Image (cartoon, rainbow over all chains, first blue to last red):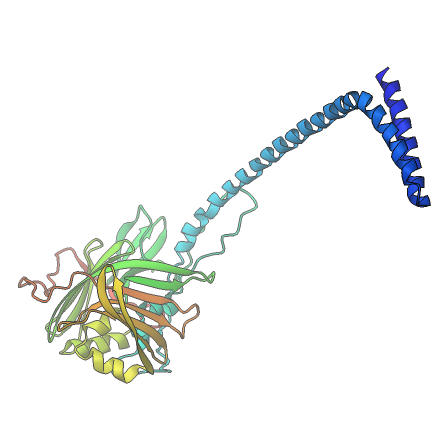
Length: 200
Length: 195
């Protein structure tokens, strides 16, 4: 029954609307439009409540559906957990092995060289910067979660030995055997460094 | 002390260390470097420079010239640079006056609640600022050096703490006494390679 009433009301409204539109198009039919619309309003007064209830219920259901969409977004946060892949930054530890690739000499070219002083040496940190250029490997995300630790290349400079090293004497020089990677200590500037060398 | 270094990925990385400085002019220095997980003792006395790492029990000794100034120049030529070096010289003012292009008095500022003068200088290869106390006994409080010639323009910052102009210095302060199990090692050549 409600459906029929609704349809009837809708029909009336459509009729009213169409007339109103005609009135707009025709112009000068304001009174007709007002009268018909008044009629429609009267009909609406009696039926509006039912219509609104039905419509409101549907709207509420839609809102609930939106809530479900939000839950889906929350699920997406699980994707962020994949950031755990960043734990592979542990690779940087190995790369720190490459830190301080010494071998240069700031201002040794002498573009500015004072007999007593050069400002490059004043900025010794920077001086070391050119010479050492801390090597940090690109923290690329590996395709898999497996981290492969490669042995440092010969010539690599480090400022601390890995654990588990044993001291050995090779002729006149002291060396350290760290899991079959051999390091020889030097002073570079005022810093003690260890250079990866081939076993003599 | 803060020292910036340019990493191979283009990022500036900052390293910290402290230096305990004891100087007795004209020829005695004892420095204790602590940073990057290691300690290095630096002695300069009686015509020699010695660096010693007590943890690793490694040391190196080399002959040097008679004065601190000459010795610092010599070490610089051997690529043994020390950011604190210029401040150990007896002629700091003369050297700065000879090296700078411009110099400005920025004004009076506070550094850690201390009233200081901020001075700014430019030089061919570095811009630097110095913060000094005023009065009859001015002291360095801070220095910042920006190396313009290096990629990334890394900075070296020194914060001077605990000045003591009347220290009690022990007789062996500047003397390196070699431990029986200490091993002598070499200084790395300037441009890499093996010795």
